[in-house]
Image (cartoon, rainbow, N blue to C red; front, side, top):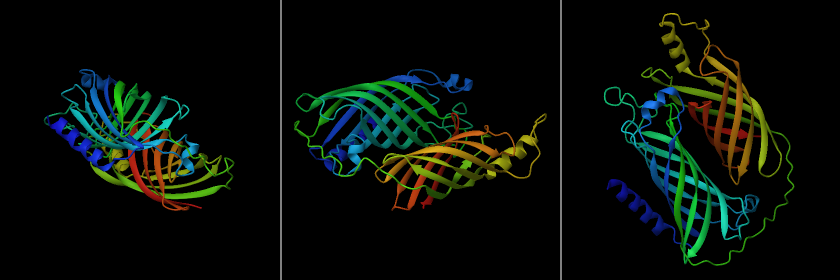
Length: 365
């Protein structure tokens, strides 16, 4: 009952806030499977997760030049409810901001769409040493979450009502702010309805006034980031960390740039992890007193208006001792304040193991 009241409240708020003829709602039900990320996850798998998503979507039609470059995407907000069908994992309530990207001609009645959403999630039953020590997926109530949905959509089948169906991937974890934090990944099939706020009418898509040809010299970026995290040893303590990054980028076109640079990681948890492991018999750790790491990376930046998405793959060239491996990946979201300054949030992981979520500022010269 609480779930129903929560969803009804948020849905009603969105309805009252968003009455416009270029907007529509979606409601989706999903049924899926938990991905087994490691052998210890077997105890968590007690059933097939189910849930719902309700979303508000606002269409674009070329009001800004960048919109044509991405085939006039939608942007919007989603709320979600997920039942893992596990007494250990509990349930997940989530809120997201999202974009819908269209693969088909925008005038077609049927559309193939990719949605990408990022937000926050609340887990009802995180790890507790006394009462729930098997939940190694969630160490905290509050988590970050992302989801991707690939689906077909047909609008206005019966007046304003249409149908949509597809596949969804949902990830949630606390990004190792507190251990344990193996996170949870779900693949699911979805089926739902969409409802336009007005009867169908022709949309006039405005072409961009910008030339598709775009050239820019190499730019140099400097960023300072930080946050808090805990080592994989539960109860070892939360500590702050710092990251300094320097890299060059070269724009390929209006959408994309390639990057090459280096990261300096200063992580006090590594010293704690090292000292705790020295107390374990037969531990074979390289002797060191320097716990900083330096990585070099190559990456890509996707520009969407004043927002960009960074993906990078790096390798530690300075690596004091074994911790998660030398290879690492980052996924970041940047918001350009002006032509030079930006704010960023970035997730760093080693394969499926998240190590940090980083908040920072930087400059592009």
